[in-house]
Length: 255
Ligand SMILES: NC(=O)c1ccc[n+]([C@@H]2O[C@H](COP(=O)([O-])OP(=O)(O)OC[C@H]3O[C@@H](n4cnc5c(N)ncnc54)[C@H](O)[C@@H]3O)[C@@H](O)[C@H]2O)c1
Image (cartoon, rainbow, N blue to C red; front, side, top):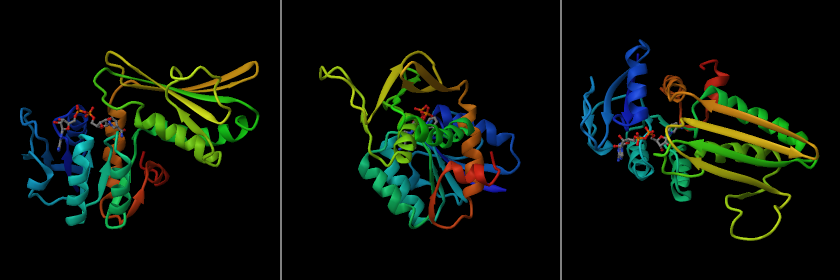
């Protein structure tokens, strides 16, 4: 049985994961961390990770970007593998994630769903054929009105997958209103829409001369991220230091 700390346990994702773990005999939440203390949980909840005194095999994080620095320091100090799912990290924090990965196992993914991770792989193949043929590439993402970061971490991961497959020569364009000019050829446009309770929609558009391909992933519930995170936690517990991704979990037949 894997023992897990849920960082951000009283948030939307923290509660989704608490419900999944209650039904899963392979994993148990032994402690939660959240400054918000107004939710009843069947495990002790500490206001900050630094105050957590419970031993565990792995930490799953869905909290806030400003909490990531102390979380990384805690995981390194306690030699705890970390499934890092919070998005909107700064460049400086991303460097700290890299450093932590030299000391403990860190799996960071902007999107824990099977569908998006399959799409990340497929996009590289599609872009390799269509970009040299002159297709323009644009990404449109839609999320609920409570989301604080834009564009979504997933939209950036999709763009990075395409860009990586094409030799990282493309610039990202987030705003076409500043300058009156045509789009650059080596550009990936990324647009964010916010409204209502949309769980998450990502559309990648390949627009060529007289033909367009649109590839869309729609998340209908947060359960898809929760399931991925729980399987990632089981996968990561006991793993040696290093950088891991959802492709490792999928490759191990865990999703
Ligand atoms: N990687 C993915 O697949 C994926 C999927 C969904 C959401 N997310 C990301 O996960 C994060 C959380 O999403 P959510 O919808 O659950 O948000 P939420 O706002 O509902 O929950 C965040 C929780 O973190 C808590 N928190 C704030 N500061 C904290 C700290 N210092 N230590 C511990 N907990 C703290 C808050 O009190 C809150 O309960 C966001 O960054 C979101 O973008 C990632």
